Amino acid sequence: MPHRPPLPPRPTLETLCAHAGRSRREPEPENTPFVPSIAQSTIFHLGDSAQAEAIFAGARPGYAYSRFGNPTVEALAVALADLEDGAGALVTSSGNAAVLCAVAIAMDGRNGPLVTHPDIYGGSFELLQILSSVLHVPVQFIDAQNPTAWSEALVDAGAVLLESPSNPLMRLIDLKATVEAAHQNDAPVIVDNTIATPFNQSPFLANVDWIIHSTTKYLNGHSDMIGGALISRQPLTPNARRIHKNLGGTVNAFDAWLVLRGLRTFALRMAAHNHNGAAIAAWLLNRPEVSRVHYAGLPDHPQAAVGRRQMKHGGAVLSFELKGGRAAAERFIDRLRLIVHAVSLGGMESLATRPAMSSHRGMGDAERERAGISDSLIRLSIGIEDLGEIKADLGQALADH
Ligand SMILES: *Cc1c(COP(=O)(O)O)cnc(C)c1O
Image (cartoon, rainbow, N blue to C red; front, top):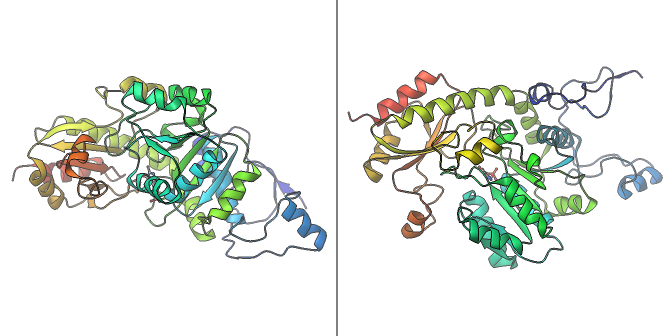
């Protein structure tokens, strides 16, 4: 049977997205569906004894059971690995499941603690607290903004988990310098690239070992599923696959298909998000009601030089502080009309939350103040609506009526 050729070599991210799900590694048979099918099946025909033996031994590619592997999920894994320019990817049922899986793989056989910083995503923070209290995984939370404490901790790290930019304060970590220090001790480095996305930041250029994503956010982009992934710079080892399938947080074929569908417009959406995000950050700076804007793309960001080095753009997640404390922040939220008061980020719709009420409510008041999360802090995920209409909604909610 004639085969249609794979994609041309070295396509750009835009081209990869437009053809997401189409293999650029192997030729595909003629007259098959262009869009990958949803392989909604638990089991697969194993063939005769010799074929089954080869599949289970890993001597030939094949599927046995959908928790171990599934063709739709595999198509998504290939697409995600390509977007980050990694060698392989494992897809999970949530971003949190991706953090768990990446930490388990990175810490396997390592002495020394998992070194991370307290301003990682709230769900990751709580997961690591549980791993530490229930399973006695050694975890060290170090302030990455304190260079001495950070580099001392890296010397003895078993593995390192980073998030840059951090959420909601958009603090940055120098990926290259951190990876160099961690690799002196052979410690693998995991970077959560959910906020920046492969459109705005390529952590493998800094030699990190694993990139994790909540595909729930920009990669799917439609606010209609929960999912995650971990992407490896090196080819996936059988041990990484073993840990992934046995932790159990694998994704179903339909949700994988939704992400593949979302990826088709990922580059287009990100260009629109970036445009609106930068414009709104600059606009907020000039508002008299606003005392501070936290955005990775602003020239007066305290780590603007790090940002320029490792990010292509500041993206569309930002936060700002209002003069007038909690009352002003609550009034602002209650007056929004277009912008949705909801958690999450990365969908096409603009969202606003007050982190002190939502993501950081578990913290005590003093601890929250120390973390820089004030009562008047508002976190925005800027969508792809008409820019003038986003500004108009922010303007009427800010104004002193
Ligand atoms: C949302 C998010 C996660 C967790 O992802 P889920 O899909 O909600 O499990 C992890 N990291 C970051 C940066 C996130 O924004």
